[in-house]
Length: 176
Image (cartoon, rainbow, N blue to C red; front, side):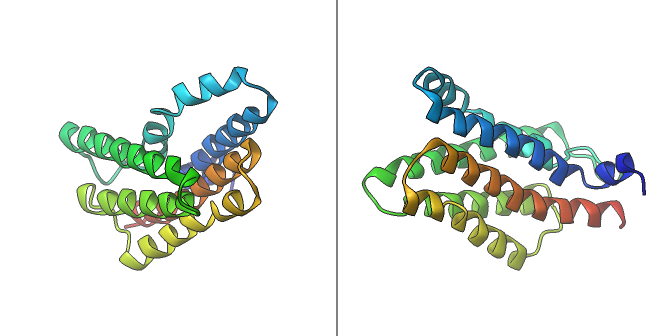
């Protein structure tokens, strides 16, 4: 199998790797000084909430077409879930392991909305296991101290864990 065919057949995970690497480097840049913090805070207000659904959900496939209302609704709900997760994440100063809960709930709600609104073939056990994994990726960030590299690594791993689930669904949809 050629590399281009392999990438085409695994678009969600390839895109998750690329965007995840971007977030890893972007998070790590917080350790380099205060200049990147303002840019980070501004871009992270919307970037992750939009890029993840746009790069992994594939609103147009050979087998399924979604209406504009479904696409916009899914993006709006995804962004709202992301804002809620960021709000929970910001509570880590006051409540220990809040970032783990934010990672778990963000994934859980996103996958449930994706399953039912876009009618993706994701099982409830996949959703639960992915959500647990998505919460656990923030555990190291919580116990080892809050620095940019650990934050970037956690976001990278969250993107990969969720991207794997959506990649499995994408591949099943291609061969149905």
